Image (cartoon, rainbow, N blue to C red; front, side, top):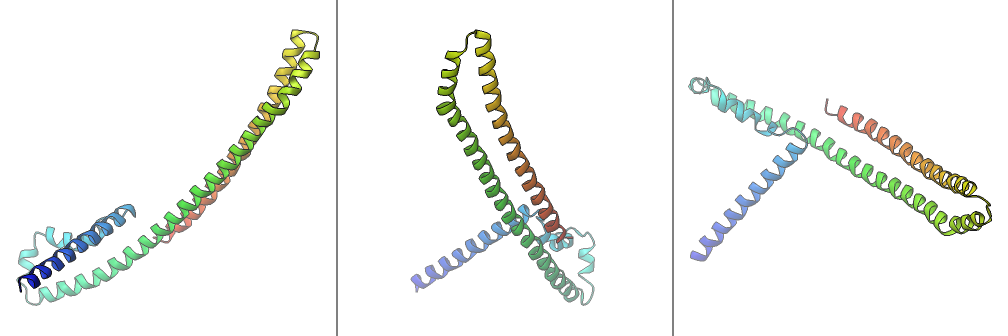
Amino acid sequence: QELTEIESKEIKIKSKLNKEKQERELNELLKNANISGVNTLFDDMIRDDSEMIRLQNLPGFQSKLSELKDGISQHTQKYINNVTNVYNEKLKEDEILNRTLNKVSFESETHSISIINTFQNDEINELTEKVLKLPSQEEIEKFVTEKLKSTSDILMESEMKCVEKINFIINAYEDRITDLMKKNL
């Protein structure tokens, strides 16, 4: 019998801990979705009402209050479901945005590195050969400067294309998020 009592207490403790965990998770979700406190609004309102003590003495007040609480609870839960669904959709959009931006950045970086590697591996040798054939220091400096500027321009153009892609992605994301947030109105 002692064992049964201990098991019963353990079950109650586990149940209580599970309920507390669910409440913490719900509160965290509501906080992240910017609606924290909405689930306790009715109880907070009733608790803070200075007239509540007098109203409780009215005949049938408790049953009407209970009906009102049930009705508000149903609407509150519907509201919470709608807002958290939109919040979860936003999280998916955020993840898609991050993956897309990472892909674009990686592609741009890869392209820029290939331009630099080409310059280091191929053009340096070509530059060296041509520089050795040039008669004056001034012509060497001019030639090298032109080659470096050309490579720099190619890199800058690559980065500008990356920025344009990122701007397009961000604008599309903002449009989708704006449409998504309108669902909460």
